[in-house]
Length: 443
Image (tube, rainbow, N blue to C red; front, side, top):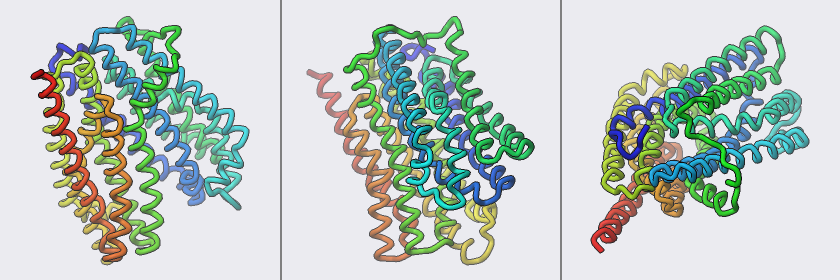
């Protein structure tokens, strides 16, 4: 895959299925996984998974920090036709991730009980959660490397392999859940083992790319310098902040909604959360498909091709988010029924919430592309600021403000207002950046 000479549309078409498919397959598998485990082990298993979920979120945040920074710099170096420098950034991020995984393994196994207690496990839930956690911490290195290799394999011209790995991961996880928990009766530890083995298999599938003749992911000795590590981490901050902000924002929403609306509205928010994850697979997938092309073009100094790619990304976001908005608005009633919200009061609340949330997606797609645009250019402050405003700060601020003014009626408008205001700011920053680029070219 030649990021500088192949058609940007054809490359986008190759990268998009992998980016969207990876997120969708993980989302669907997680949902079915939860249903299977609760069926075999009862509702207490849901508590165990919920308590351990911050660990998965932390690993994802850490992985995103390192891989989004390393892979962006990898693609920039390819754009400058400096393969050795690209391989050094690849080596640096992989080694850094292995070191982090090793630290998490040792620390997690030594302090499993203390960690689970700090996350809220107590009473009858503590022991099964500790069982789950011990297995989980034992597999930290393959869990960390899974996402790293998936992204690098996609960037290195094998997006179909990375897509296959995510599908295999989902299937293996579901099969092993039934086998370990339903047949062998290994309990929570078996559930964790099924998940960890599935991710390990997926990691090995991606690692098979390293054996191919056209593999560009070569380890280079002497790649671990302080300057290179610092640049990887600095470049990765914006996208990792997005992951972390979502986790924090979701927790704050849960608390506030429970205070002002109670369990019924929290159930409705659970539906919104599931829909938001599906929508995120679309708008993040489009942005991730643009990312390596943008990074390579930026590294090569090809402003024309960069502009073509970003415009194409905007067009694809318009199409995808318009489709998602229309689908959610007209399918709101069906979704409410799908989640067994058939009683009149909760059905009406769910339908109204889904339709209001759907309108925010029209702004979210634009904000996401602009975040990736600034991240690729290493404008960390711009990208991080937009990420925090759109994903955490403004939604939470308006949640508290609107529920204070309008009680439960204000809950669902916060995302729409937050995304709209963020778009105004991001559009101003993006327009100013384009104007400054034009001025630099004219000098």
